[in-house]
Image (cartoon, rainbow over all chains, first blue to last red; front, top):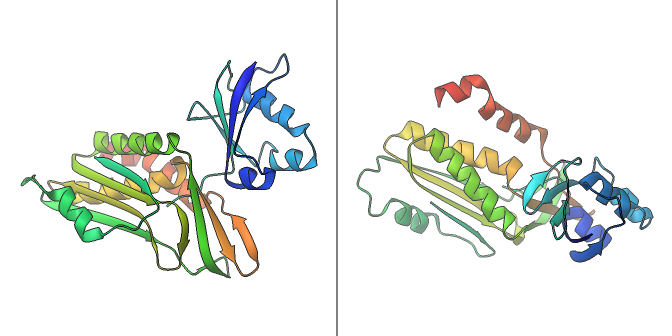
Length: 84
Length: 157
């Protein structure tokens, strides 16, 4: 399953990536699974994308870890927001 | 009702003139401006860097404004949020509301800035002499949002 990944805030800077198209391994069906898969890319990924350090959105709506994903979804991964 | 996300600065007087123009029912106009402080958590801040999520951020701000106009009879709302690199004393954000009476204009303005803090996707990095770090959502801001969702406040709206 192909998805678009976009990064903002701390993970964008530390992982040195803003956007990518990813092909998820079979059986990955929710946000928690996407993060778990990304964490296998290496130490810095594992550290930056710990469940309690990131927030997510699916197709530009905030979403929690159990949220289901589908083909071509835009998944955003970011640090906790801090505007204003 | 209008939202802008921009690098450039804004002029309060010009924005308020536009906001109130063409509506002689406006009896109250309230504005809030957030500024860059030169210190935070005992560190001197040289500059901040703000980024946003094009598309989602505008949607989130419009949703916040829609919720405010459902609760209070606001005649008009203007939100401007700056992005990019900003320095001490710079203006970061403007929230302005107009209404028939001051109570609604004050409440709507406060609600929108409180809500923006925890529901609009912006990320702020502080750059100090010691290096830089991304700020996280403040617990006091989360408490402010919970306050607006408490039953007592809902009933008075």
